[in-house]
Length: 228
Image (cartoon, rainbow, N blue to C red; front, side, top):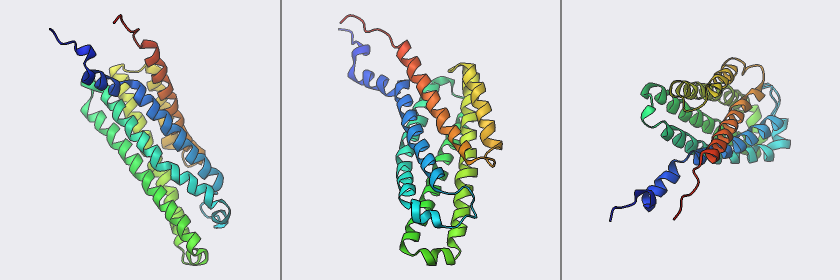
């Protein structure tokens, strides 16, 4: 008897792993966790990097909660990258795909470094607030964290968006409207980040929109089950 590959458990499992729905859910989870973390930090930490350390006394718990969400957001983002890249298939352009993957991993790595430094700052302040502020370590760490998260990480996010938009434009995997929208948002991240720290929320909002669109399209294109 000829083997029915469509009903083979291994084939079905692999097909389920590759479905865009997995990428959509991973992207949605990342957007919610990362976006929530950014909102909590922006509400708790003064935008002025020269501000005193009073916020550490009153908002340390909120900042700690925000930093606790970052690793889980990173896990979801890794899954999002993996499944999105898998959808390229034979259409993958090695040059652009390398930029896409590299910028995504750099964004994630830089974000983790910034979160780790912020966590260390909060813990050090709890252990000895006076010594931390008087030594100048607080001012130094505050400046470094600002540049890591609000300059370098978000620019890597912009490169990630630009490379993915280029792949979409060349292959037609997504409607060109999404490619042009992504190009525009990436330019905002590249050149407007110094004016408002809230601009950083563009990236998780973009991931959320893309993920919801992929999920809806997948549900609409899902074939009806045939007779058994």
